[in-house]
Image (cartoon, rainbow, N blue to C red; front, side, top):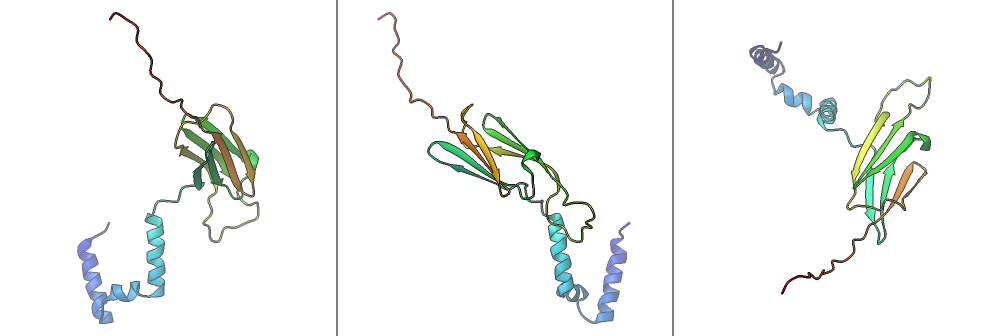
Length: 154
């Protein structure tokens, strides 16, 4: 269990031994800076996977999804109203590998994307090439408002 009093005593003893601010000498060193960076990375929320861009043309909503290393058969796309759901799995690179340093995402993923507007129930298509999933959805254009005359007594 952490005892703040003992920590303060230890900190003062180390400071006397080194004759300077011990923590400044630790954290101003290259190793200390690397340690602080690693701690900050642990505290930061992980980036969303996969990364997604949503574009709009005159007739379509275009969604681009980065999926490096993913096979087409490992991807599922679902559409519900103004939400697009992209699911899949990023496989491990193979057997016999021992991870030394890792940054890439591995495992199951699920990403929900809000679309800027409702899209048509037909006229959508998807293609996958070079790790980039492209989904094209037909925009729905609402008819202009029309006045409706009211019949009755007058």
